[in-house]
Amino acid sequence: MAFHEDRGGRCLLDEGSAVNGMERVLDTAALLHWPVERLGGGVCALSQQEELRNLNESRSLLMETVALDWRIVPPEWRVLATQRASETGDLPRLSDVDLDVLALALGLQANLVTDDYRLQNTYKHAGGTVEPVANKVSKAVWLWELRCTGCRDVAVVPPDVKRSKDEPAGECSRCGSPMVVKRRRG
Image (spheres, one colour):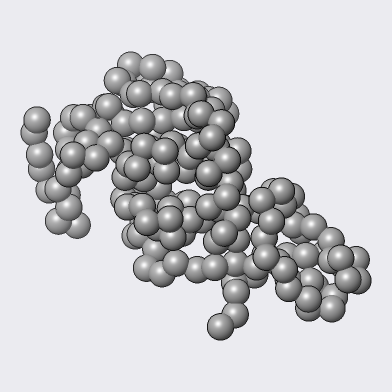
């Protein structure tokens, strides 16, 4: 197995998915942006194939030639991922594919390769190790809450919260105004 150092001084693998003996779960950003030689042996969720096809069809076709370990996420790992994302408050802003990637990393206790700060936050809070694709790894773990835009009431993020990148996460039980995800104070 050949190694080389990138400009940031990290030791990179030219082949295989293990870093320090651990498997690597690759987020879709790695599939889109890393050189093919760095991807071989990486673990990916089967749901990422459709996401990759929708984002870049030619790159998706190229991934068919790479020795990736495509896996179906066991339901119990998906439940664990949902629970962990709910604990940090990141759940409303994670997609189904994000949850599958997180579930694989949690279930395999693997390194998670992602630039998604919500995934990084949740996985680091759960004790996991994160490796960036191109950006820097987040420095701190943040906790999020639901805050009412009307009466300013706060609530924890429940596991069954409405998930959307742009829309409110629900309605306030006190006044009916939209609940939005905000960084927990204090």
